[in-house]
Length: 312
Image (cartoon, rainbow, N blue to C red):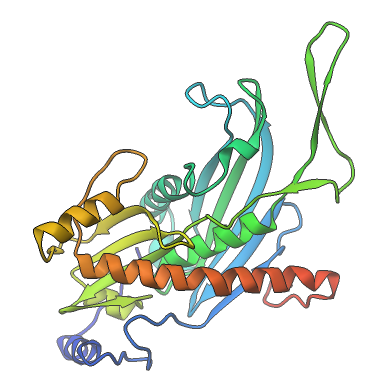
């Protein structure tokens, strides 16, 4: 992860500002930086999106290929994730510097998105036990200025919304075998329902308060952070603690409530600071509606849409 050095005087200034709900750039503790979302930016993919959050920029491309379902879930497709940390994002990623971060991001994204609560995996099944759609999600980090998880999750949701999967027709050959035929019509495609696809909210504990969308300077003042995947209904599908600091629960009852809320598909249970979980659910739930509205408005423009950025 990209890091910056912050002096003790700068840390005191940042801590005192966050204590008074006033950050260095003028935001409150639960405000995001300016975010830009653009879809359909890479022509040789089935879906793509570019997201910039402050000075953090990520590019996501999705390719759909026919594969074989996994034995344990023969009636579902699945997603595969690969994260490439470009050396242009930060000098720390030169050589193999970003390899460890890329693996960590890929594993977390797999836990967040590759489950029934996030994506309708059954809709990716073509023929149970024989054929299914495999979505290869490639993430490229273009610029790094903190809060990678949130920016990547928004970009993935936008790219899934933009993804067009060719319609499949099954036929039988003379020997009774099944043949897969893909439609040649680019408009004869299937779209994914991304309404339940979660957005990740990263909350950093700075002093006695938490901040959303922390910059690298604020991250340097944080002792621990909590990554929460939240759906449009406010349901937490995955949670992960990062950093060496501790997050203390407020009471036994609240701990029990959080345990039930943050159970994921792997059966892993963690106890987190209740205030962080509640804030993450509140911020994540509020993020979905404007994002979906923006994506629908952009798609309604069709070819009249003006492309921006270096990919335009």
